[in-house]
Image 1 (tube, rainbow, N blue to C red):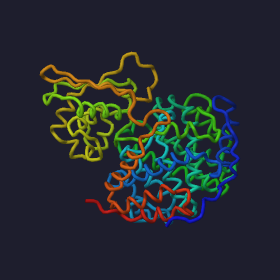
Image 2 (spheres, rainbow, N blue to C red):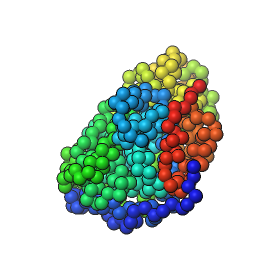
Image 3 (cartoon, rainbow, N blue to C red):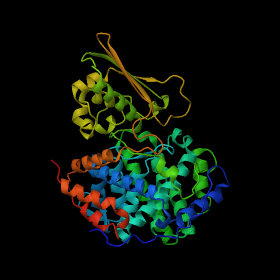
Image 4 (cartoon, rainbow, N blue to C red):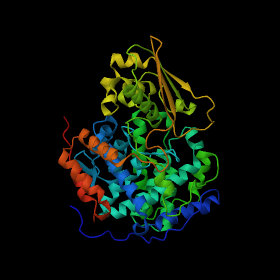
Length: 477
């Protein structure tokens, strides 16, 4: 049910402004905690609230779409077997559990399809970690929609500034920032939701930083999805321990950055309550696959739609940023999970099927002999003259050469919705949510009701109507 009263102000709304760049690491750490602790809904800019609601809706959609994926299902089965007591919903699973356990399940499911949003300046997938953590605690504590949005935005702002400061070195060293900085961001968000003081927020951050882990070497396996769930779970545990008086120490976040990034703690952007860098860097995906595959998929779809691509293809040349090779699987994929990180499969199904959705990453489609044969003719080449670091636009030039000598090319400098401050059109975002929800088993009236509730999230006195509606196990097929 929708609340009939306006959202009340949450928090003091007097978060201090913190300049980006270098500074005293320990002082910066304390200032970040104070910034989040002092944040509230009443001074949030309307454009930031709008983007936050779009990101929240998108994440709930990909959770529903990912319900059948084995990673989330296995984690849910384990959590159910442990029988933790609580009122937080394992979305679409038909049971409630403790907040940390629910966040573990929902975070893993949110990242299972690799269809969740990314924040390219910070090299993270923020919402798949933040929303599961915040929603689980908001349900337990009867928090309002406005409180949820405020916690999300302040955590997003701080976490992306931290991640942007430590990356790309942290990422290049083999860490998965969605897992590591994600845990810290979740701790900040939950601390905000629980109205922690700046001191308690700092302890929550320290506890999370001390526990944070997650490696990039798990990409292409269920482990990547679990990294998001573990980060959400860690954030809740850290904030809950701080609430009970557990201390994490001073300078721990600075120590984490020094140990994991090889330098001093610095913020990549100012924390000034504008949230410009935080929401401007968000990118919502069109296709359920790794971010570096988005431009090659777009290029392949352009060719399939506008060119007479020869039925007899000799080879497909995919020219990308050299950094891409670190993030994709080069061997032939065996499962849909692996295929999301395989350029050859992504390009092939785009050309053959002329569309890319969840069905293109089923195990059956991955094993299709025609797909495998054509994928074997894809050649991935490095873009000449590329900079040493990653080009986060992930540009691509795709060239298809036929056995008759004919050729067609398409270039994509950046996939749609990848530019700073550039989201996909609202009609496309809405269609994506509806498609994901239907894939997850919801009927059209349920989808329409959810859209209405999420559009007015800031007016909901509690999030319980949403979580209750999403608690039952949807029927698929």
